[in-house]
Image 1: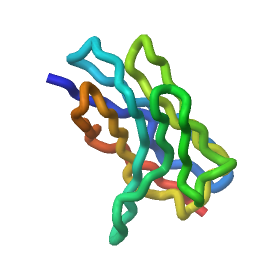
Image 2: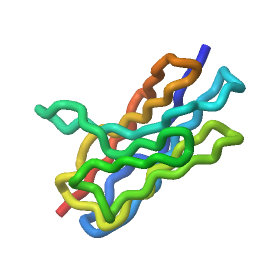
Image 3: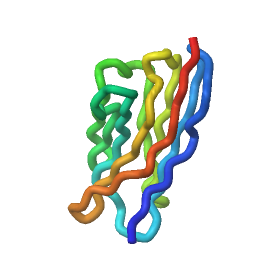
Image 4: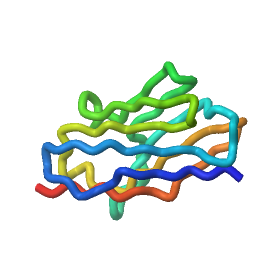
Length: 115
């Protein structure tokens, strides 16, 4: 059974940085798509960053230039480096991976940015 486990969420002051990690367990098959989404209270879940086949990268407009997605293919791990954080970045962050055509979600990790 594939499970995604996220870590790295924390409380940080505006202007600070955090690095989120998400590792898939229960499979030796590499994910073809890895991504991060977030959901703030009262808002819909939105794309933060996605990486397709390790090459094509997309970012949400609000995080371009501040966030960076990367991966460690050998361990099926995806990272999200978040710099210059803003209070508007406060949300639960979820990772998502597509493995053999199926989408898997992590349980979410809370990121809180204080002003």
